[in-house]
Image (cartoon, rainbow, N blue to C red; front, top):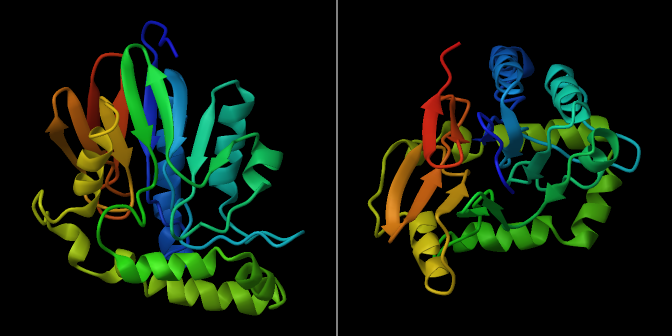
Length: 252
């Protein structure tokens, strides 16, 4: 994709709206909507790399209530002709076709490759990648199993959503300290994963969320690993102007 003059590609991840409670999440939602409103004038495309919601499950005719301002702003931007791409995270991995049908936003469950100008990108949420986290990988297989999802659909939404929201907020990504400290290149799973991917194919940028810690590191010749941070503590996002990629903080 060629970027027209003064147009940019934007990236954001890990908003976890709804956590720890809707009333406490609301100011963060307002801030994110304000950011979307600002970037729409020069956005060529917007990538949302997962965990937009702290919990999301699509029943056949029911989705979790709330988030109307975020969904409305995404609908407005998409209706204006700006492409938006959504990658499910570990908190909204039960997303199916609601975004596609209602907002015309494609939803991806794994990494995708893109090219902007002469730069190549590998993009995904990042959960379950790399050599470690075996416990989560086993758990994800259970949660994404069609039979498990079928069973959950039989739980009344008032019970199922409340239970899932409670368990989601207890997740270490919200409450733990593991995500505030850089562990070193030899221990960061997504850095190791990025280096392994580069052994078979070159990318200029390998961009992920999930880690909640903004970082941008060289992982090879003309290759950088990027983690976008979050909208809980850092309020960071990525922007590519056709030549360079930067991580910026939203201060509004």
